[in-house]
Image (tube, rainbow, N blue to C red; front, side):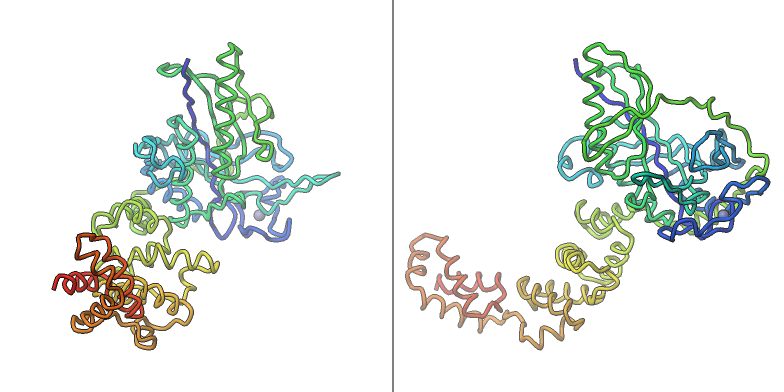
Length: 486
Ligand SMILES: [Zn+2]
């Protein structure tokens, strides 16, 4: 029998804000342990929480970017459970009135892992529906040493957004694309740095299997706390195969929570799952319900940046870029901004895109610097693209000019003049070079005239060499044909 997986993701995103969710402590990653704490985030009795407006605004922004409906009356609830890194014994979260409901994430080709980008699943442009986005407080961070454990309360009470998807995903690769896209949107909107290594984006996975064509869901198993996008893919590949093997043997699965051991490459049982009633949710009596007005939503919308996917479409539509080039340039905000500045008024946006993708991005990547730190400006790229498009220099010379610009910060025209790189396009000079090449290799000339048209390539190579690499290659080829025909 053929089986398919049904996957839903719960993604926790740390919201970028100056202070914590319900107190004035700094929200900062990497400070010495327990230096950003106060009675509120340490859970002392009798303290009063005050909600963070910036975190609420950013959660609404995330909802708007993902096409959610914004709830006009929202509230915070207490989710009760005992956990050593949460001294209140409850977490302030949202239960039945989250800030955002509905919405969706469109999965695009280049968000998929590279090895499946040619498969139909990457071409399908499927939209994964969202259930909700709610805002809560994060718990403290435990670190387990050899003989003891330590708790850092710097993270306790920092704003945390939870994005819950419908069980619309069917493959580990779709989960990969979903997370990649979500991460892009969070970074792009300035909502979170969404760095999984720093725990700023964490993912729980719900996965079950069922016979293909069946409408009924199988037994849902949760895998907790995955901390890399490729790890999510690996965990799902393992877990789906594990479940299919058991189910096809007739073993009955039970709802449970498992952990992924990345080095070992397997999941293991953590606990059997609680249900919502175990948490005894109730409205937090210390926090008033939130009233969100149309004006507030409009103000957030007005400051909203274009989504990477929208930019990608615009780059293809207005600038004639290929889907691949557009996706590379739109993937990061500073990259897209750099490209747009360079393409402004350029004769051919495609040349500008090529220079950025093939030369600039690899150069800054290798040097470990940002685009803003590179010595080549958007105007510099546009100028260089202009020299290439007009045929003043050829592509080989372009590489040389680019390398010099990057090393010295000089202008393209300046480098061309200094190095005497100007391409030879003058017919009289080209003809002289062509005649010299023919004279140097009469055998190839004879072969060409005798019908072996391929022999012209040797002569072209010779002519380019004679010109010191400066001849316009296309014009040189045409001139050679003319000289050989005469
Ligand atoms: Zn505090």
